Amino acid sequence: MFVASMPYEMLYDIGNIAIYVFVLSSMFLTGLMVTVGDLVAPVRNRRLLTLSLVSNFILVPLIALTLIALIPMNPELAAGLLLVSIAAGAPSTAKVAQITGGNMAQAVSMTILLTIITIMIMPLFLPLILEGADAHPLYVLANLVVLILIPILIGILVKSRSAPLAARLRPMMDWVSNLSIAAIFLTYGVIFLASIGGIVSTSTGATAVFVAILFTFAALALTYVLGSFEKDARMDLAFGAGFRNITAALVVVFAAFTDVQNDVFLMVLMVSIFAVIIVSILVGIIFKKQRDARKKAKGSGA
Image (cartoon, rainbow, N blue to C red; front, side, top):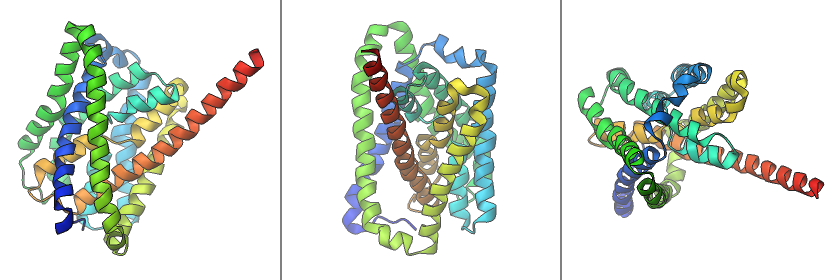
């Protein structure tokens, strides 16, 4: 079990506040980047839309179910993994697309669409996934709508009404979002590193780490293979599936449990940490290769 001991309670509280700040700022920022027209754009590309839906709501949950069947884990870890597996539409997908040279506008639009679908299906699956949850599915739905959907819609409204205002707000929201995610990983990172010996020394903790790494690699690899049907968006599809919507998962965990220091939260946190590490390494490798290729092309042209 992941528990913040007494010396780290203040860090734990700061991390909790940072989560809410990150959720609100990142969702508002996502909305500021698109118009209503952009939002419906993915629907026009039916093949991309189909692949994205299959990847995020069929393939990735099947990966989670397969791991649960093959690897012994307690019900809370399994619930955390299932929760993450149906949480699609990671806000970080757009940033990854920007760095790797993907279609950023398309990534943002698809992120919002997947997020809306996630908000609709999560409360439906909640009674099946989180048997020990304290909250009613409607309460969880209300939290998802208030913390995720409404900030996105406000951002879209601002962008549609005044593009200059949206352009001025984006850097500010980007800064707040980056600062809050840094605070999340700093606070929980310190607690995690301080507790890592105790976590990995237990079968529960070691299983959570192993499953999180395996889940992330499997999601990236299998969706990349599936993306061969839409090669122009292959990397966007893979990173979109490998980077789960931890924002939505955390909103559900905080809404569903009065005490989030449990193994459900542990699994969500482990997937979040290792997805960031793995995706960051892969994005860095891709960015370096693309930069080297541009330099080589520029040198050849000279």
